[in-house]
Length: 259
Length: 367
Image 1 (cartoon, each protein chain N blue to C red):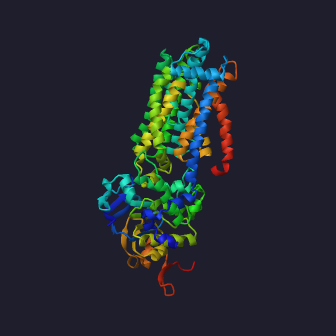
Image 2 (tube, one colour):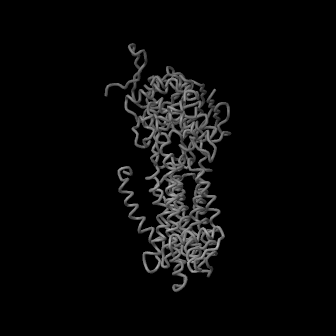
Image 3 (tube, chains in turn green, orange):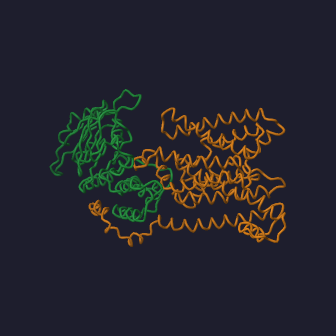
């Protein structure tokens, strides 16, 4: 078991609003957990709790069998590859240097990436088909290229879990599909994947476990078929959405009605 | 995308990493780090040459070969055939100030580059946490109390470090780890120190103490001797070594607090150590030379233009460029006019248009 989350609840200090309440789930290697919810529901807050940046007031999170409270930043980062929603470094680091920063959890203070790390970073860039960008400043890449570089950075230290914060939110339609396919492949290779999204159709495409978050801190988890229901979606988004079985595609799609 | 399917295995399989193929890709990282070393060697040679040229020029000109001989004979303890006057000018007057200019220029530049990286802001200068303002207050108090040279240096150092301690106290009282709160705290402390400075100047004797305070604030390496330099050399060397060792981690800090933590950095500890070292460098510099503006702000920009933003290359390059720049500014200041011009005037006159030029060169990137 990679993640074991037991009854965690969180509210920002000084705020009366509980972001999530009594949230529990388990995640094994190769599993995908999609966290679905509207903007502002607290999906990113939950992810930040799962990587130890925010500490839940109640409950426990176990990462690879150890309570996350007892782990150092480095020990947590060693297990997790984190892909942020968007990233704007101030300085124009090259893509290669940016990807190499993913090795930080394997390095001691005063040490820096070795030649083997350079070789591995270039190898990963090659596999992602962006090795030609190795020399380019990361900040000048397109949104899709930036995300590929960020995923490359997340896998360079061979973590067990990959966390994606809204991986498709800044991408065009084609790139969204590429990203979702990549997430599925990464899970098939054995990575446990947790991602947040506000698109129910993406959740249906990915399958696996689904958790929903609502404004009142209510958290539900289950299989996609159990969780993604029309009444629940209407409750979450305050909008009518339809679930259609499309035989030709052999899948269920979530579509809005005519405007 | 099919190749990516076997990615996890490939990443973990060392066999899959074909070093020859990887090197054939001619990655910029390798190329740049390859170029950085000769570039630094060129800068080191330029600094050495600059030091000996600076020893030659002034009101009492000394030939290049004579200055070279005097320095090396003195280091080796040999006797030379030159007159005492020439030796006093080179070894007693010029060498301490020339070396101080290089050391202070290097310290302020490394400190500036570090602060800019840690606070993710290329507009930050090494004294923005209140170091210089605090050092000025310390020095002014020492001058008002009638102390001289080393005591003024000690008061300035204490004032600088006390100001940064106050700056870091406020976020702790607010229980905030935010970099913005720290920067705002620096503005508050700097402002308060400015007012105290105004008060001290107001009560200072206008014929003796006020000019001394004002002159100190303008910065100068004219009165630095080997003894005063020796007192700050050890903390400077330790701080520089630590910062050069942490250069790659400063890159990670510069990605932002959340990202740095997610990558496994102990942000509070790293930020604390880097700020402490950068503060020691600035406070030590300011304590012996007074306030010298622009160096710590402009030189890291120039360094980034020449070697890129990676602090592993930027910090050493900035140190060498900063040393060279301040050496040039000091030599210009003592040779351009009949009376010596304070350093801050020269660094400002060169730094401001140079910064404007850098802005012009990079305006598309900045916008």
